Length: 97
Image (cartoon, rainbow, N blue to C red; front, side, top):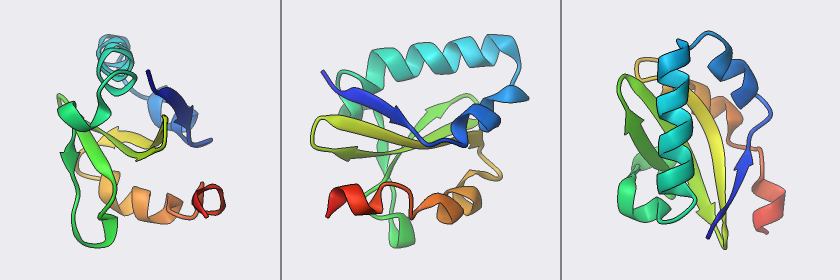
């Protein structure tokens, strides 16, 4: 089992999301990312190499697997998620070293 660790701004990400979608996101994160995060996600490339994305409808969950933890950086609509994640990359960097 993997522990789920959320970026502090993820709470802000989900505020405007429809309740049904929030429930789908919560279920997908709990069932998929806490058990086999690299089996369900898609690896990202370029500046986001080492990060993964889980697609849930029009939303993307961007995360990184570090030992037995899944660090969730963002849960945002697909059109905005990658630029927002770039702003959050420094979070958790010191814990990896």
